[in-house]
Image (cartoon, rainbow, N blue to C red; front, side, top):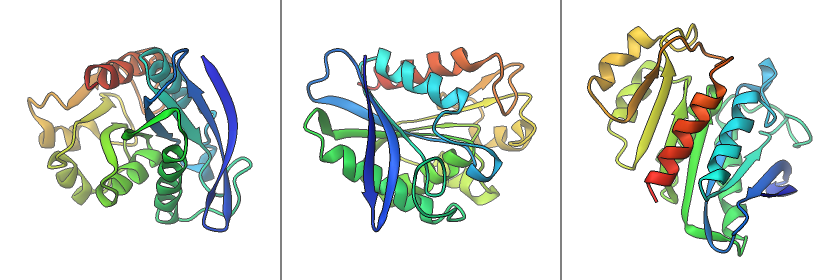
Length: 208
């Protein structure tokens, strides 16, 4: 596994990231991983984000995790979840500039706040091929939109999640293979990180 500490532009801002490659990294698919809410301590070094990235790389794709504007060494300030969509698009632009990446196979993962941003970015940017959301902090209307999102997708939630109500959202995905529930896991996935990694890794590997 090879890791690069990278910086890329989003307009006038410079964003910080970590790009990981599998050992054989010629024209590999790539997945961008979006972190939890930066105003509550979320950044690209979050425990769930790290596990996800490792699982993605172990299953043959590159993984780019990055700090949203105002987090870590990324420039700017918090954009209310709106400006962060531009950060995601800039990350896609950056991956498309890398010769090691299969530019027709770029996907997104988002966790919590990052899930909300990733979903909106995926709706707006047709370059996103696959989408995985972990405990996504979506509003009521977004859940219906997500159910109808046409590209391959995976929604992962714990049945003890105290932020994203499992009981409220499960009706959207009854008997739907895209919606997976982990018994006992809460919003922070403490003790269940490797379960998240295994499912996310399998999703991207199985989707090619």
